[in-house]
Amino acid sequence: MDRFDAMLAFARVVETGSFTKAADTLHMSKTTVTQLVQQIEARLQVRLLNRTTRKVNVTADGAAYYERVLRLLADLDDAETSLSGAVASPRGRLRVDVPSPFASRILVPALPAFQAKYPDIELHLGVSDRVVDLIDENVDCVVRGGEINNQSLVARHVGDLVIGVYAAPTYLAQAGLPTHPGELEASQHRVVGFSWSRTRRVFPRVMQRDGESTHVQGRHALVVDDGNAYLSAGLAGIGVLWLPAYMADMHVERGELVRLFADWQLDPMPMYIAFPPNRHVSAKLRVFIDWIVALMERHAPVKPKVP
Image 1 (cartoon, rainbow, N blue to C red):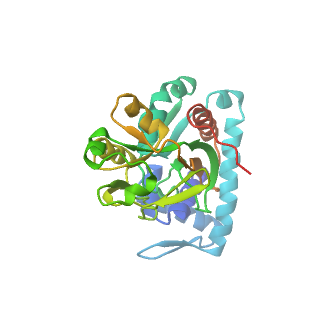
Image 2 (cartoon, rainbow, N blue to C red; image 1 turned 90 degrees about the horizontal axis):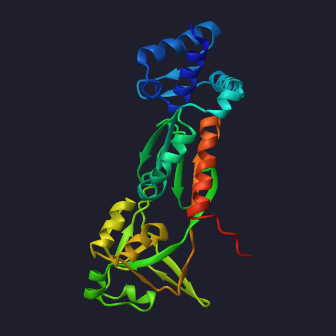
Image 3 (cartoon, rainbow, N blue to C red; image 1 turned 180 degrees about the horizontal axis):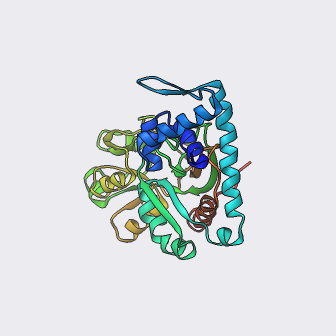
């Protein structure tokens, strides 16, 4: 029995709660993963997992063993990456999930520089605005806009997106040019709603000017849960949008969008990079995090807190 493979298989079964999911993430057969775990249990002469037809639960002995296995796997990775060559050239597969507009407008255009510096990192990029289960889907980290309230993740604040209100000229020609955010509640106006997939709710926007504050919900012409579709709806004249500047600036320059209420302010949208606390921060993940921090510093640096 290869103890490393066996420990890795056991850890992945615990993390995913499934022999099938563990096998998929490790690119092994379910039979192989099952045999590896059984061999560990036979050697230790303890039951590590309780199996039913529907799920797999870790026993008390299994939980204690799992914590030790995590440390051993992390130490092994540290031993390998502590070598000067490994540190200088981190390698391996890195799975990352990012929002679709961020991928298309900021991350992917900057990737050639990252790949030139780290040619041995094989980046698997998931592009979506959905909530990703990092453990079940074996994702190393995610980049997300908005506060991350999941206490099971380690989240690092990497940037703040400036938000503005925009509409297409075709929309304004039909509905009229609003001069106050409150006018968006009127019957002739429509907004495009963005549904956060973790809650399926469309939240009102809070706008401020010279001590005045107003909450704008608006009348929804359309609600979507994808950033690129959201932008496309606004460009098509379906309704008013709240957009980060990096998504809107090019379309404003082309005359495809008009900024509204420029003298009103919205709180910036924080951007985070998050990963599971029990996922060892490998050399390849560490350099990717550092690269994202530098990338956001150029495009949307973290804004200092106002006392």
